[in-house]
Length: 284
Image 1 (cartoon, rainbow, N blue to C red):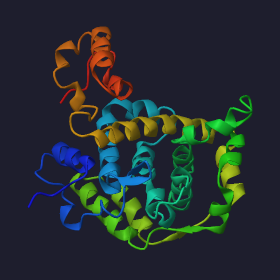
Image 2: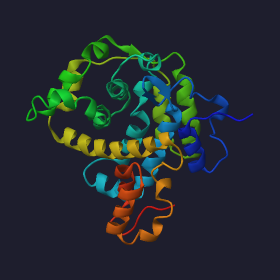
Image 3: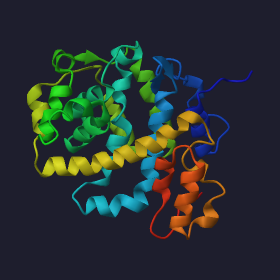
């Protein structure tokens, strides 16, 4: 019988070079979507999270030295990649309520991660959700961001869905295949607690301008990149950012010509353009 998998799961299987995702026997796609379209649940949280982790691995050669030179341990990128959407496991998100999932992910990460650079970058990775209010005072400090956050939900606390462990275990299985031991250990911590809360002082400390926040903004940029690369899988294998480059590798030594080809022919050109390096394109 043919399995009706989300497109993200098909992309994941292709990237892992297997016929079906390793988590198919414990599939959580129907219960834990990765996004909503016209309020309808779509995709698979486990597949998207794993694809984000894979994008983290792709960028390691390219960015590790640069980030560590700025005081950001590469393990922090790993933590951000697997926790950035954990708020989508919340009871509120799963049941279709309108919630700021990046804020809930921030609260969960705040209780798990030792370095608050990670939760701060997670809070910021969907900053577009908060820009409307920020634009009213465009020259204010980033602390103004807290006025756009649903503080009531955070301070009174929230719960992950009762079956959240199923989704986490699906990702853990794939992280073991990818040999991402640190990420897997972070999920072990996530498995221990279902309820989370934070207070305004914790958010203030994260958004106060200092060296911590400057590092969080760099990590946020990295997370934004890998998240968008992974999210391109929502439209299927041909639209997946690196597969959309098939046939263009002949232009890899000519970045300006390659950029023109991408802009003309690829739907998510903004994501695919990130493959261009000074000398060569990332081709498989």
